[in-house]
Length: 238
Length: 122
Image 1 (cartoon, rainbow over the protein chains, first blue to last red):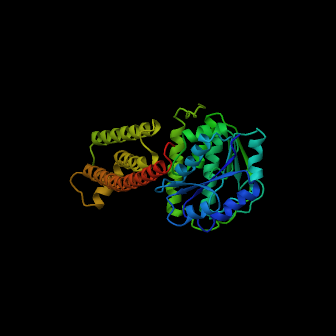
Image 2: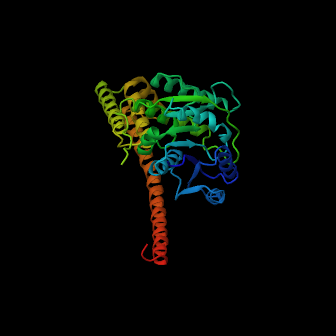
Image 3: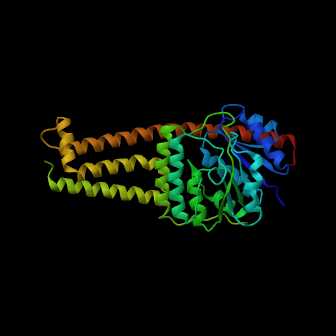
């Protein structure tokens, strides 16, 4: 059987990417670590390759959604059954992968998401951002009819059913919120598990305050329009 | 004061614009990121059409004394200019990106070709 894949999207994370890869190895050395360098202009791809990761180098920045989907397509084409996503900036602690993976490995969920807001909370972020996340959490919970506390979290584990869907169709700019609703509409089972997220290991968040407004408007619009769309069609095994 | 029929026509046209844009997003022929300006255009024009007192006030501020609906045209044109400008930047980025893609493809083909030569029969 194909090895599980860890998809690691990274922009310019040369300072933290090595630690992330080693962290995933330390958790489970059988993981194929796939770093998606999304138009990186620093040494992220080189550092990732030095640490033994497979590097998918996008020739220019396609945005986090397109980058993550590249990794999902890799996993799909390599026949892999389980994928985790760990961001390259170091905010996701690979030591917590066990908790995120457990519901998927146990067959209880198709998508498991590490949430900062279930149970323990070691995460501090700006007030505006927390309010924004709460608004989105409330909207998503109402749509999927299940309590979702952290719909923007990218710390996820997925099984092949979920990979089939997201390899076929994945939102582009800020994908996690929309993807949650997409997964629900396609009948995938979602579970949130509590995790602690760390301060970013290096680099800068791609979301500042003006961006936050654009982010909110765009995501809410997308959620609204999604309600009137037919669910996406997953890829089929050949 | 704005003639009532002008206000109604403006409101109907704005609503049509909004509906068309939303349908284009729904059918995935238009991405949200390129739709936001169009939606803003539709909403602003709808508000200015329906809120007739507001249009008069704004017309007075701008010194448009004769015919307040002229402000509707001006705002509409302003938004069309914004959309066009936005598209110009998008097209510039796309053309840069397609050059980069072509270059990457050429480099990869060259590398593949050399690997084939190095291992004949492979």
